[in-house]
Every structure is written in C-alpha cells, then in structure tokens.
Amino acid sequence: MENNIKDNLLEYRKKIAELSEKEKKLRDLYLRSLAKGDLQGPNVGDSSIDKPWLQYYSEEAIMSDLPKMTAYQLMKKNNMDNLNGIALNYMGNKITYKNLIDNIEKVASALKENGIKKGDVISFCMPNVPETVYCFYAAIKLGAIPNMIDLRTNADRIKQYIENSNSKMVISLDLVADKISEADTKVEQTVIVSASDSLPTLKKYMYLKTKGSYTPKKNERLWKEFLNDAKVNVDDEKYTPDYPAVIIYTGGTTGVPKGAVLSNDALTSMYVQQKYGNPKMEKNDRLLGIMPPFIAYGVIYGINGPLTAGMEIMQIPKFTINDFTKLLLKTKSQHVIGVPAFYEQMITELKNKKTDLSFLKSCISGGAPITEASFYNINEFLHNHNYKYDFQIGYGMTEVGSSATFMVDKDNLIPSSCGIPLVKDNFAVVNPKTHQILGYNEIGEITMDAPTRMLGYLNNEEETNKIFKKHGDGRIWVHSGDVGYIDEKGRVYIIDRTKNIIFRPDGHNVFPSKIENVIERHPGVKQCLVVGIPCIENKNGFIPVAFMTLNEEYLNSKDAILAEVKELCDKEIPERDKALAYYFKDELPLTSIGKLDRKTLAEEEGKKLKLSQKIIY
Image (cartoon, rainbow, N blue to C red; front, side, top):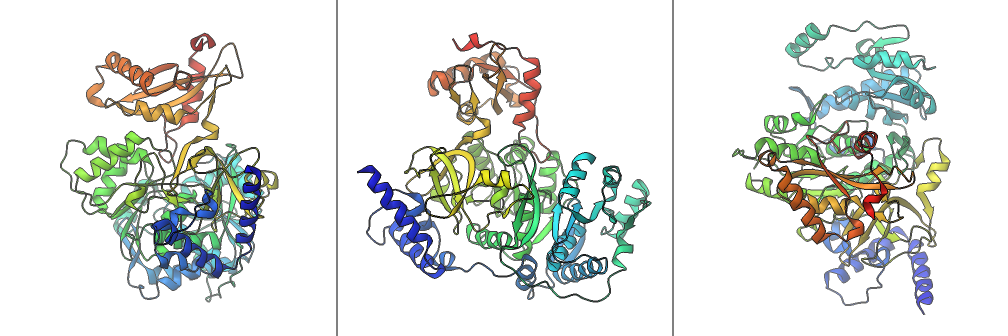
C-alpha cells in the first residue's frame, strides 16, 4: 500500500512538472488558499507538492513574472525614473544612477575597444569600490562574464582561477597587482585600479600622500588610461536565456573551491524573490555594503539586488568585524546584511549603552549558521535599542544564487528554523541514498529546485553531477549536502551541515549544532563551536569537543560555568550526542568575512590535543 502511494505521488509530480508556467502559477494560488484555510482540501504530506509556505506570500508575489532580460538591463530599466537618486556612496563621493549608468556604458565601450566580446571572461580582483560595479555591469552588457576572485587569494590560486576560466583580461586593485604579476598568466593585459580613483578630492590627496601612486609594469595599464579607449556607446548584447553572467567561487559541499557559474536569470530571479521576501527594502533606502563582491552574498545582496531596487549602497572598500558597529552608526544605513558574528560584536560594544537603532528597517543574517540562543540575544538587543522589526535569518548556497529561504512573516520567526522557501523556489527533503522524498518532520537531505540555480561548476562536470540530481519527476534538484526537515507550515530546519557531522570512534554520528544550541543558552557563554578532534587510537574516529568563549562578566567563574554547562548538557542531550570534552578560549577563529571558522579551529586544536577513545567508554 505504501509503495502504491509513493508511486502515485511520483506520477503526480511528473504531471506538475509538465504544466505551463501559467498553469503552475494558478496551481500555486490554489495551494496558497489551501494552506491559509480559505479552501478545504487534502494535504498529501509531500512539501514539494503541497508547498505550504505559499500561505505567507501575496497573490501578486505568486503571479509575478520572472524578467526576461539581463541583470544590467533590469537594473537600468528600474532606475530610469530614479536617475538623480544616489546609487553608490563611496567614502563621501555620491554617485547618482545617471552617473552609474554613464560610467558603465563608458567602461563597456573601453572593454569592446580592447577586444572584449560576448563569451569572453574577465577576471576581477577587486574590493567594494565603484569601479567594481562599473566593470561588473559593463561585462554583462557586452555578454562577457565577470570572474570574481578574492583579492586575498595567493598567487598560485589566482593563476588557477584565471587560466581555468581562460580569462582575456584582468582588472585588479593596485595593492594586489604584484600577485597578478607573480601568477604569470597568459593574459595579455591587466588594468590597474586604485582605491583612490573614485575618492573625493581631499581624501584622494591624503590617500596618495600616504600610499603613493602605482607605477604600471609591462602589460599593465592604469584605469584612467584604459578609460581613454572609450569611443562611442555600444549596444547591449541581446538577452539569451540561461546565459552565464558571473563566476563566483565556492567551497561547495567538498571544501575545494569551484567556480559556480550563475546566469542572468539567476540574478534577476533573485531580485524578484528579494523584493517579495523583504518588502521593507525600498527605493532610495541605504544599505551598508560590507559583504565583499567576490562571494555570492556580496554580488547578489550587496550589489545587484539593492541597485536593481534603486537603493543607495554605502560602499566600504576595507572591512573588519571590529568596524561593524562604528560604520552602522556613522552611515545610519537602514538595511544591513551580515553574518551572526557582526551582530554579536555589536552587542558586545553597545551592551551597556542606550544607542538608538530606530533608523534600521531590516537586519538580516545569512552565510553562516546561528544558534537559537544567539538569535534570541540579537533580537532582544535590537528591540531594546528601538529597532521596530524582527531580526531575520535565511539559508542558501552559492549554487542557488546565495539565498533560498528567508523569514518573511512573524509566523516564521522561529530561531530553530531558517524561514521558508523563497516564493519561486521548491524544497524537498529526501533520503540521501535513494532520493525518495520524505514527509513532514522527517530528517533527510535538503534539496532545492530554484530559478536561481547555477548553470554548473566551471569546467567541472564531475562536481556538477554530484550536486545536480535528476529525480523521478524529471526535474533537476540541487542536493545541498545539509541535513534537515520541513514542517507542515513549510518552515525549513537545518540540523547541520553534512561536512560538520562528527563521526565518533564507535561509529555514532554527532551533530555539533545540537550541542552548540544547548551550550549557548548558558548566559555566561558568548560563543561555542563543537568540532571533531582526532582519536589517537582510531584514525577514522573523532572526539566531539566543545570550545567556548565567555561574556566578560563571567571570565572569573570558569569552574562554575563548566559545571553548569555540563549539567545543562546532561539534562538536554542524549549521552551519545554530547561533547566529550570542554575547553575555554579567549576567542574563536573567524574566516575573512566574519564566519566562525570551524575548520581552522579543528586543525589548530587537533595538533595540540591528544584524546583517547577511552573517553567515550
């Protein structure tokens, strides 16, 4: 009987996949009414069929069309009535949308005069400066493809990225130009940009007085010289469905950097979903631009989304976590997008101050997991400082254009959940071995079918095939490698990243996030990471170990806190799922964009600690 039900559902999914776009929208409206209780009807228990999350979206959102144009064409179209609005605010230099579009057109002309054409790849090694935005859209205008490289990458890896993408040109910040030279690629021309090129006059003078001007080497040209090649405006390359728009590097599910190729459709579709997921982002609002442009979070949420919405980006070329609070208060940005550590830093700095945060309209966290305790602490802090809304988190991957879920309604504001799927996305939880779709609240692998899905990994069919799987319904689903479930209201819960699971010497699997959620509920614990430390007797086994930092007022109470944390874990966590050792640290390592760095912690402590499997017996 059970197999017959599963076979029937599979046939139903196949029929749904064959519907026209209009029929799918009308069906989604019907599902919305069912989920809201406006209509009575059966729930089949399959999230990918029921789509219960649609109850939180408007009819307008469900019936909206996805744009059939390039990311640049959509950004320009949306701002033709906003040409005097501020697009970029770079250290006090306010660049209007008219200036932005004019500069993009000028850069596109210069690129074309230098032989760049449709299908060519241009590698960018740039921070958050106006020239990055100009080059990004100018390339898309020509049908060329930006290859976004982290400027902190070493020369060997830069060489790999440039040559693997067959880049025709490199545009680089002067401060990292030596690494481009050291990479010794076959690229014939490198354009050098200075962080001072778009600075206001006085700040430019002070910058050059301190840093000095750059002297180009062989095959290098300065930005201003390059712009002199611009002759006449060039036509936009015609929109082509599923055409590459940008290459962004990601660790994916294996930890090895790969180039995720995102299409124009991914960028424009994400803009539509952002608009309905967070309608508080309005034209002429300010966004604090702190996420780097070489990650999906930065390209999608830090550049394309806000500019397509007509917002003002406060561009920050060099950012550290210690700058976050100061920058937010200085710029009075209404919107900020970051990782949990940024907000936790703000709490530390403003904890005993009556700072007014009423200017904020949205505080969003993504890019890294957040514990329930941290979510509560941040939300409570914001409310106590006059923030009128709620702290919101989401979940996603570079491979689906950075974001796939978001907290769009108060009913989704459950800290153990990461919100609901975006309005045009579909989610299913599957058995990771058989790909059989599981029911509500059943734990399995999170998979997604989204219009923002990447085209594939650059020149890496093998890795692409590992993450893209064709299900029985004939559709391609993205397999996240993350373990979680979906409840009856469509809320998504991530239990842990598959790569974070700790395999004990006795074969039992431990989910670090479960332990971290409990430990961080102790008021004395500021942050916690649980990692696997190699077992000295069994190279295939790891000991789950908790590393904690403390809030300042508890630093002299370590013994008492350790006893209380152990007691809390004994009470809340089954014996085989607990950490088996606990250590205090002054601070936990962070990645370059402010995420807690689980990998570095495990490597560093694994070299120091010698733990025996006897600890578990």
